[in-house]
Length: 411
Image (cartoon, rainbow, N blue to C red; front, side):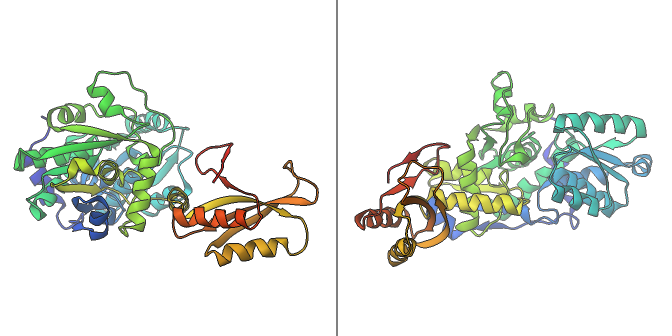
């Protein structure tokens, strides 16, 4: 084992008062929804919006004088970059952050605000990482790895100490897995304090790197995911054996499950989480029966979700639940027809969100037109009732699919 409980305790003493001891909370609305007693560790409330501050601070605080003078470097497109930049500024260290060129502008600017030198290089994180390695060698900088460093792992492990101190009755911990630093640190602390506790990891289906490595399979990771914080193609060299030794199981979630978790946390739990931050809850939501009758802890490990992406997730969630529906209605292309249609929708209790005519591109008679309308409804049953009313009133109505790219499905 590369780290011990004593290492985690030492990290806790070192970062005390500099990284926040975030709350561990119950959320009654989510408990009612899932039927599971879950405690949520809100690392999304850290100053930089994610748990990464703990490991970064533990690492940076233990550099010697020469390393401090030369400065540090890391490669990241998100939370690790923010953590290193923030605490380098706090400790008065020069920091260089290498980020892939496609990194969202907001993350680049937030990192620069901490005084770090931001270098945009390469189309992927792997290309950016090669540049960071070269910079580190050329300039004599200390490379701060996001997960594969004993001091970083120990720093993340302080979350486990805090969770069990606040709720020693915890039976299961459900923790997102990317490179493995978070779950390795938490498991090291938790298993030492309570050997019988179960540790369940959660990966994105498009990046199952840890579970594949444990099974001896060739890596298949790749593609876009809402959980970019755990979109890691290769697990850590140090974290892999820790996970093999201490983790009881790994759950893999597809994109709809991850999206649903983000949406449910926001709408039902009033908690804002990024995709990776919602992954632990996503595993509970996807299979609540597995956790029935047990006291479960999970980490909302980050809340740095782009506002536009969050908006999209929330709207897609409404569509999935049938509270936002798309209808294509055939009407006569004459004065008053559209007013009659909208009046019927309003009388049925539907709220029109968007509406557009489709005269040019459909196989309809010249004196008729299609109207595509997006309607907010109370629930799926209300949506079906609304469509039935339009048909009964003489308006041919087609319910457009929210799941396929091309086709439509009859309501």
